[in-house]
Image (cartoon, rainbow, N blue to C red; front, side):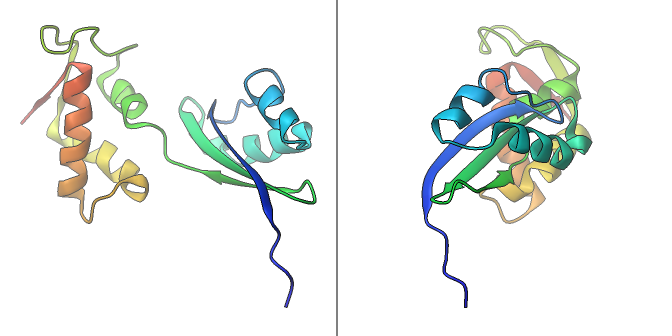
Length: 143
């Protein structure tokens, strides 16, 4: 049985899907971890080709022999909600200002997409978590 590689460093980044470049923040963060940056950029862009237009959180585990593994997460809930509501940003003061309205169906669609990364057993519970994020962004959820 092969020996497990020892993880030397974990790097967490948020990169636009399918559009990673060696420019900051990717280059400097991976350079410090002594990762082959062009190889990472190619692998990441291939993995996230279907997520173009979204911000993709990624965890890069760097091993002692300078190899690495890439684990992508689902886009942040705020990013998904902005796309669903078709807005550029949330409200600066969400208690007073409301920037958009989304339907319950749109909210459930976002919840289904976020399910793997949420601490919820079903879509109904996940929807409540996402609804809280929407409320903090000044987005109204209509029935």
